[in-house]
Amino acid sequence: YAKGQGRNNFQCFTSSMNEKVSERLLLETGLRDALLRDEFELYYQPQYDFARNRLSGCEALIRWNSPSGMVMPDRFIPLAEETGLIISIGAWVLEEACRQGELWNRDSVEPLSVAVNVSAVQFRPELVDEVRNVLDSTGFDPELLVLEVTESVLMSDVDSSVLLLQQLRDLGIRIALDDFGTGYASLAYLKRFVLDKLKIDRAFIMGIPEDRDDVAITSSIIDIARHLNIMTVAEGVETEAHCEFLRAAGCNLAQGYYFDKPLSADEFTQRLK
Ligand code: C2E
Ligand code: MG
Ligand code: MG
Ligand code: MG
Image 1 (cartoon, rainbow, N blue to C red):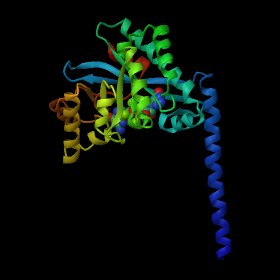
Image 2: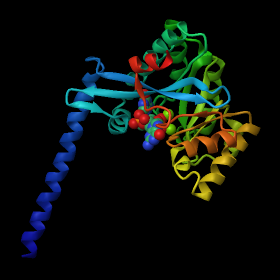
Image 3: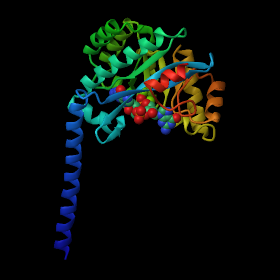
Image 4: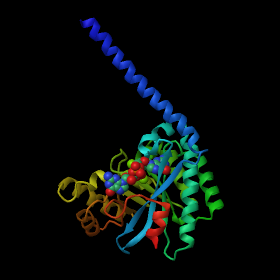
């Protein structure tokens, strides 16, 4: 009996493993063709400026319109990173975001910044030339381009990161530290990395105003950033209470479902009007 059960368990194990492997293979094959078939699309989530009481920028978020439906980035970015496909996907994102950003700014009086997420795999010396070339070819104002990196990206090699961030900023662009507070960078690194914006992770905003720890952590991040002359962006702002707390605490910008979900380029254009 024990033997039979063992064999069954083994079969279950291999068949679920096969499923995982073939799902991954399907995803990977699809991902390879996705650029050629023009299946990626950028959505743009508005960012609101508390002081000016208006929309002042957006974050570009990739979507994959695969033949079997829309796939969210959490499902394919990790695989794109493992396979190295993120290099060409990331280059497409950068170019598309700058192209669209230039169009929006051409038609508007108020400047609109566009933030682009950069993966660890892309964060290498070649990125400087890539960004410079895209700025040249699209004519997008460097001051309006924000690159979002995470703590773990910077911490994997601190000295090279310091240098790379400096070279990127020399192009005139801005740097934001994404998901701040969830990684393992110490406060001392806020001094070494030249940063323009800190994005306070959604995990802290979620607990506001009930959770006293989240309230304390969020206000402290805002205070420290202000003293270091770094702007704060709250992620995952979902309620009026989040919004009122952040405004009173002196947070600069907010992004979240309370204002808008990520919008297609057309929807975003409508929103601007
Ligand atoms: P992220 O950069 O931290 O982006 C914020 C995520 O939070 C987005 O998920 C956004 O849709 C979601 N979000 C915004 N407001 C709210 C809210 O009020 N509540 C909740 N629950 N969620 C909210 P999304 O678009 O699924 O992207 C997930 C992650 O995928 C991003 O996290 C980013 O790390 C990565 N990603 C997205 N686009 C790109 C890209 O073009 N390149 C790279 N390398 N990574 C990307
Ligand atoms: Mg981001
Ligand atoms: Mg984030
Ligand atoms: Mg994230």
